[in-house]
Every structure is written in structure tokens, then in C-alpha cells.
Image 1 (spheres, rainbow, N blue to C red):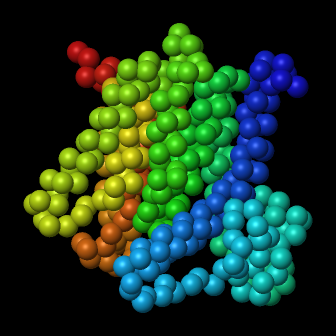
Image 2 (image 1 turned 120 degrees about the horizontal axis):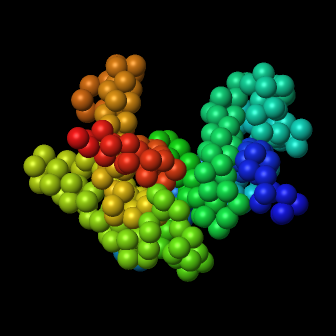
Length: 302
């Protein structure tokens, strides 16, 4: 099986596509549950601090079961509590068969669930097509997974948890512990030095913009999680690719941000998380960064 996958690129891409559907289904669970789990941890820590300070303050509890992890309890309809069976949890197909409704109470199921599954499958397959059967493919899939989960959490809650960004930084720096420099393909950082500088520059660029904006306006223009996410992207693609990441994220953020304000009829104070745009730009740079850079330089050439 391994020999077949390593020698047949279309088969590898198809296999990884199916794998992406399965992982996408799990990513939906992580996107929904991880913020709840982290919120409970933060509340517990806050309660301990207040208790030590002899402050009688009680934190409100959420409506989720007391034992709530990424694997337990089983997923259920939030409206009627119907436990979702294996048949109802087949990626994309179950949503289509059920016509986007709960099997029990017919409450609508968000189209975002099959969208995340398809997004994961397609991006996984593209990674397989670009990097082939290699260690780089594994790192690219992990990178993609973190970006998808982090983007949707940031979109929903405007947070990029350290539990996602910090491991991603170390993952990017660890590529060179497993892969020989000569085997590194374009768009990845070419060596450990470039990866480390990329992480440092990625963090410092947004950190500097954050403080300049805060000093000038008195407002916080972005969260600290954005610094760490760009540091992680810099660790993967290297410092030379960071300008492309920043340009792509700024352009997509401006265009989609204005579009969102128009659609939602919001004013200039409408806040949009920057993390998803960094993630889009980082992934595009990892996959096509070298090609985009060469194309741009050819346009400038006399």
C-alpha cells in the first residue's frame, strides 16, 4: 500500500482527500468544543485567584455537560439532544442525505459543517499533489490542520489560543530535525536559520504594528494571537516569504472586510479577526509562494 501511494500521485491525492474528509469532521468538533474547554479552564483559574484574594465572586457556568472533552460526550443536536449516530456523521454525505436537518427534530444543521469537511479534504489533497509522498507532506498537513482550526475559532470567538499557535511555532522549527536541508522543497524555509529568523520577524512585525497603532489611536488593532500565528507561519516559510504573507493577508483582509461591512451594514468600528486572513495567506505561500514570487519578479524584469 505504501509503495503504491508513493508511486502514484493521483492515488495519493485521492487517499488524502478521503482522509481530509474524516479529519474535517473531527475539526468541526475541535472548533466547537475547544473554546468551551478553554473557557472553563480560564474561569477555574480566575475563581482560584479571586478566592485567594478573598473576593466572593461566582463565575456563571455554561450549559454543556460537566464532563466535556474533545471526545466525550457524543455529539448531539443542540435543540433536542438527539445523539448523532455513525450513519448521521459521515462527512458531507450525511448532511446531504438529511438535507441539512436533524433527523429527530428537523432543526437546520449549519452548512459550515460540510464546508469545513470539504475545505479540509481539498486543501489536504492539494498538499499531497504538491509535496508528494514525503515527510514534507506530513508537516504540510499538520500546518494546514492548525490553520483551519485556528481560523474558525478566531472567526467565532476572536481568539487564537496558545494551545494552537505555540505548538505550530515549534512544529515549524522542528522540520529540520527530520528532513535533510537538500530535501526541503521551495516555499518551506530553506534552513533552520531562515526558519528561526522567520519566526522572530513574524512576531516582531505585528507586535510593532500593534504598538504603533495603540500609541496613535489608543485602541488595540489586533490580538496577541496574531503575532504568534505569523511567527508560526514564518517558521514554516522562512523570513524571505514573510512579505508575501503580509501582502496577501492585508489585501484579502481589506477586500473581504469591506465586503463584510457592506453585507452586514456595519460602520468603521466593526471588528473582523485578522487570524483567518493570515492563515489563508500563510497556506497560499506554503503551497505556491515560490511560484508567485518568481512570477512577480518576471513581471518586473526588463
